[in-house]
Length: 202
Ligand SMILES: [Fe+2]
Image (cartoon, rainbow, N blue to C red; front, side, top):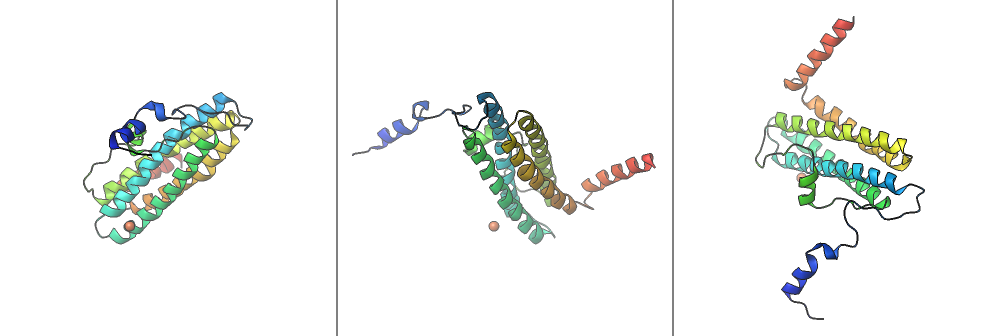
């Protein structure tokens, strides 16, 4: 069979090539209502888009980090990148398991993510750490909300993935990133606030 470039272009553009549209779920014998699976997929896709953004932010920071802590942050950022990449796969495959369509391409992720846009250029290590914490906190809040909703509607599998994998991994990474900021000014302010709250209670 002969191919030319115009034929290929015609074939690969346009909605007519899709066998399932984004935002829909196919039937699966999972003993879960269509509506429940649709709601779970919707929440999971948001968390997936934000997790892909955080994963890529870790690689950016791995490459571009500078300063006295260069080597330890270079290593830490790549470790967290790898762990976030595992979460991306788990989230995407949960979406497909539920009969949905996982968000996948960078242009779609860019349109969907709620993580604040990161500049192209390099930033100081303190700012890198601060941005990571902000993205983690967003994902943690989304994961808790989606986990509660999934649990309440009987989708225990999604609830378990969001709590056991997404939530716990993000909380652990927040610990490691937060401690890097101890003494940098940002974390100190939080510590000060915590001390004054503890003081007021005493
Ligand atoms: Fe590397």
